[in-house]
Image 1 (tube, rainbow over the protein chains, first blue to last red):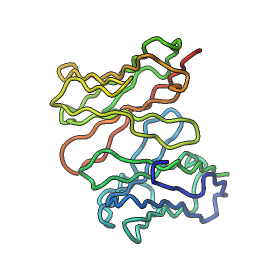
Image 2 (cartoon, rainbow over the protein chains, first blue to last red):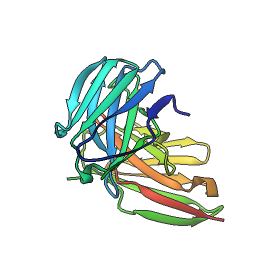
Image 3 (cartoon, rainbow over the protein chains, first blue to last red):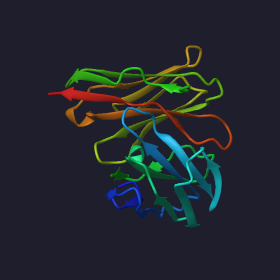
Length: 113
Length: 112
C-alpha cells in the first residue's frame, strides 16, 4: 500500500464514451502526476500538478483532460478516445516537484473498443 | 530519443544467485537515479536510489552502482529470491522542477 489510490482498476470504454479516472492521496504531497504505460514503452509523463497548478503538459492530446480540485485529488477526464489510447494509466505523487521519490498508485487498465 | 535505456527486456536468474540489472542514460544533467519494482496489475514501487555524488548505495540485498563517466548504473540483487520476480524500471531526474524519466523496464524472473 503506497498511499496513492486509483479508481477504477479496470475500465472498458467505447470511442464515443466519456469517463473519468480518479486518483487520491492522503500523504500530504503537493505534486501529483499522470503517467501512461503502453506495452514495451517507457512510462510516459502526461501531466504534472504542483500545488494544484498544472506545471507540465507533455503534448498530450486534448481528448485527455486533467483536473486537480485540491492537492489530494487528481482526475483524468477521457472523451472520444482511440483504441491506441488503451494502456495502463498511473497516478503518482511526491512531496513536491523537486522531490523525485514518487509514490505510484496501482493504475487503471484502460481498454478502448 | 530515449534518455534512459534499459537494453535488456528480460533476465532469468536462479534463486540464490546474483541478479544484475543495467541502465544507461544520455543526459549528463541527470543527478539522481532511482530503481522501481513493478508487479503485474500494480503500480511501480520505489526500491532504491542514488545521488550523483555517490557511486554506490546499499540497502539490504539491493545495491545500486553508478558510473558517471560511463553514464551507466546497475542494480544488484544478492541473493535473488523468487519474490524478486517483477519488472524493474530505472528512472532519472535532473535538478530543478523535472519529473522522473523512466526506462522501458527489465523483466526479472528468479527461478527456484
